[in-house]
Image 1 (spheres, rainbow, N blue to C red):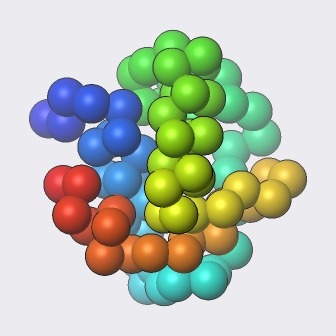
Image 2 (cartoon, rainbow, N blue to C red):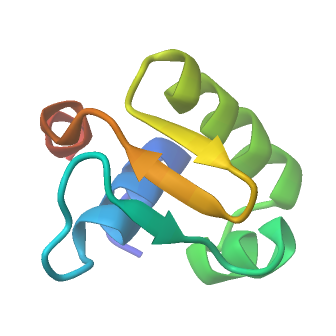
Length: 78
């Protein structure tokens, strides 16, 4: 992958979805292991980064869905 950090990989994965908009519910893979494998990172590292990004107010995770709160911050990561 051309993105070095987990945060960049998560941002790219989300922004690569067509018609992504703020406050939209984005379905997540069934498990973090599947998502981590897709991004070529460890599950624990992905989990830590997701918590950090959620704390920064970029998105909120509810069950198996992610709700984008700040698309600009996500774009700035890349």
